[in-house]
Amino acid sequence: MGSASFLKRAQALLHVRNRLLRECLAELLAVFVLILITLSGSAQMVTSSGTKGNILTSYLAGALAVMVAVYTAGGVSGAHLNPAFSLCMCLLGQLPLWKFPIFVAVQTLGSFIAAGAVYALYYGMQKPMCTPALWGQGVHGAGVLPGSWLRMCPAPARVHWLCPADAIQFYSNGTLAASGPLETASIFATYPAKYLSLSNGFLDQVMGTALLIVGILAITDTRNKGVPKGLEPVAVALLVFSIEVSMGSNCGCPMNPARDFGPRLFTYVAGWGAEVFSRDNAWWWVPVVAPLLGAAVGTALYQLLVAFHHPAEDGGGGGARGAKRDSSSTAIPLGAGPWDK
Image (cartoon, rainbow, N blue to C red; front, side, top):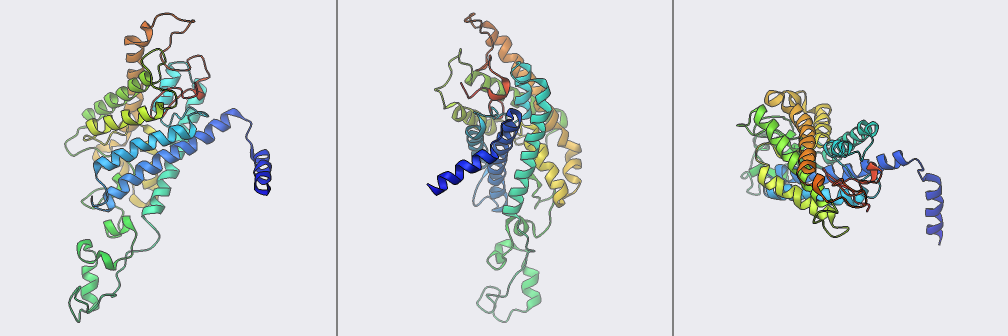
């Protein structure tokens, strides 16, 4: 009874009555959850050199993160999670245009904070160091001199059991590199494959995001096939996973300006330096701009080829669920539609 009474008093004290603020708080938490799981999957793959994860597990983590994030805020903010989807909702008249920059700012902030959490989780505050704990036990040979084991310490394959440094420091030998064989910046933001040009990368992101938007609008269109109520986040997660495993080799399928820019900005201020913006012919702007264009293309395609042709019914005509509702509470994840039917 005491704890229940305390919770009621806390709720009465902390309850937020402003609808926009409630939406922003829910969106912030959902994006934080999305990026925390997504980047952690990438960090585990990179820092373990593939022994505790691979590209498939990284993609799976990102897809499942979408599902968790949508369940987290779908009934409050609509769980847009992505400026590209927020733009889609604006184009469909389900999100007031004045809310768009607010949602984008909250989504970017959530991504930035989540990147900081992953940094703390995998980086730590210690500097890499080795201890002579196994001197004379056959590890480096009996009678090894301090200079010898210190010179050998950076070789992870030989002395990783002697080095208590945290994952990112250990993997990169204590340096925060944005390029090179031991770079770790790609844990946080996406970078193109060596063969990819800016123009093809731009096209990749337009097409990938357009497909995402088309898929989400179809999943949440009650006048189309649809999915059972409450399972839309699962269907969207599968959609994201299918895009990642089929179109991820070029640049990792960001499809989300906030997901890419927030963590990239964090790496800039955390010590990776300006190379995170200058690398690969200043690639950074492509995953920011191209998904927005892709969202417009995907929205137009679904409306022109599917939604506009639904038989007139109860004055309905839209294509995305909850078309008559306030936009802010009828969206979805990385680009979806209403969850609160």
